[in-house]
Image (cartoon, rainbow, N blue to C red):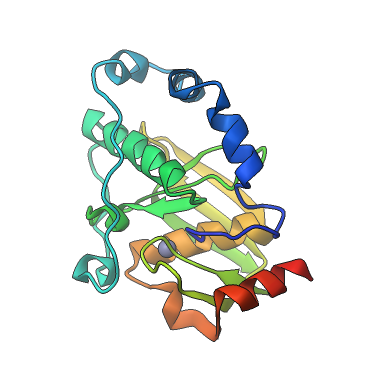
Length: 210
Ligand SMILES: [Zn+2]
């Protein structure tokens, strides 16, 4: 998402995928998540229960603040990331930024349901952008609001992972859109400031049928 994608784009978390993901039960899914983060944190992970956090809705001030950089890559950060993932999945989203759960820090996640898996971005910076794409976006902090937004088609970023290790990532098309939407959140920039045409849910469906 954007945070919220409707069916038909081919990239959204579809009801079918959603079903598949949960059909084996939450415990299995959680175990699978843990495997994705196989690391020294695994010991830590078993010490707490994952939580679905309340999502902050517009016009809460925290959504329009520039987030502070993360300096400590500790258990608290790992827990925030894990809880953000649970929250994003529960809300059927493809991305979530920390200010959307009331934490004004440069932490965001994206998972559009493709082979890229979960992308965790801490202190992300955009290094390169190229091209242009225009498409519908929504946001978990703006339920029922959709609009066309133009963004670069390609993006290359540099960020840190939950251990503080730097990485670079290149993305295009929908993944690039989702990454840019979330990085905007960390700068207090909301997608509504970039909407060129608002879409009703009916228009959104029609848009996606094309
Ligand atoms: Zn958003």
